[in-house]
Image 1 (cartoon, rainbow, N blue to C red):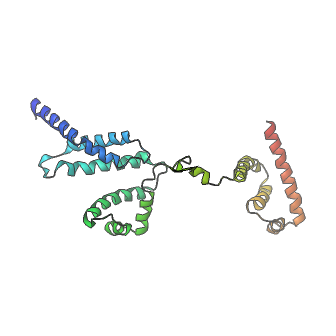
Image 2: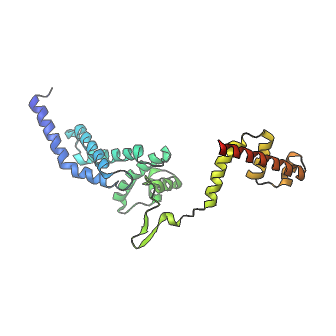
Image 3: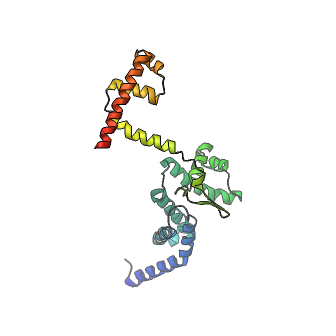
Length: 239
């Protein structure tokens, strides 16, 4: 068992090691900035990982401290992003492949003396090229781009202004949401005719052939159905 002095000396030494390498931890955190998580939160994750590495480090291992602490810090930062950073979470297999890709990129950059291509990474990880490209294209998409973001410093328009926004589409969607529950109140045969006419887009003649009626009978049936729906809409408006 360590004496009081030995325990205090160990704590003091560990604090010194942490202070000496805190800037390194912050630099690792800065590599992940602007991805939807505040930099201050990333620094806290990196500092916590550095502290954990200092507590577990074995001076007799023969490895320098940074060789041990660096992967620990980067691993915790990536884990933090997997757990908290995704606005739209990709499949787990993609997240796990991204972690392997990050490690492979570091190894290949050192051996190839250049940035590795997706084909290099796929060969190194023994993964299909399509899977690597899928993981690379979704990497870093932690937060959607604001539609109010300017397109450039010398341009006043925004991304949202380039997107079409048809009022007719919104009106149609609103109408469907409103009328849908009312259609469910119709008899099953009438619902089938509504579906064939307004969802599948069949003509009255085609509907008649489908259900064994003449075009005139279908026309009268549709007129009755629409009149009934109009009545139901009126009841909703009055309620």
